[in-house]
Amino acid sequence: MSDCLFCKIIAGEIPGTFVYQDDRLVVLKDINPQAPLHVLVIPRKHIASLNELTADDDALVGSLFRRAAALAREHGYDQRGYRAVFNTNREAGQTVFHLHLHVLAGRGLNWPPG
Ligand code: AMP
Ligand code: ZN
Picture 1 (cartoon, rainbow, N blue to C red):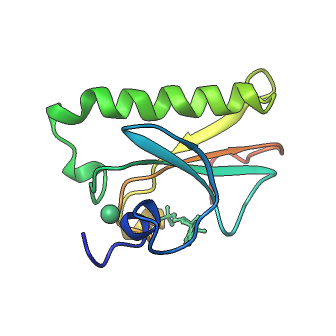
Picture 2 (picture 1 turned 90 degrees about the vertical axis):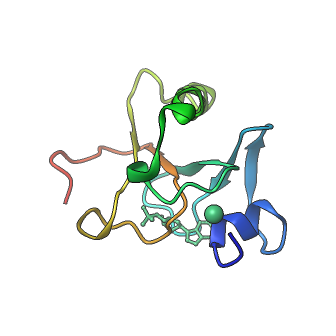
């Protein structure tokens, strides 16, 4: 996707702070963190949103969530608590249309969310 921000960061065309990478996904520090830990778990494959997932992506989505749990554990938040969330489309506040799992931790996270 030539006009996609996260595709460009993954391709190295735009700078980003990577905290993990493997053959299927990358983890980026969010540029505007909303908690002491705020990273984005992003598949290398361009998928616009949850709405575009197919059964072929099931293993990929599992790996995104397992990476989120690993990050929380590595940062010492697995027992305290953390949130892993996909925003989808306008009313949920999605601004970048390349699937990304937000992982937030390090402060009390309100529920219901705003
Ligand atoms: P969403 O609003 O759910 O689509 O999330 C997009 C996230 O990407 C926001 O939390 C932004 O702060 C973050 N973001 C936007 N541009 C960048 C960038 N260049 N590098 C890292 N994170 C970014
Ligand atoms: Zn993309």
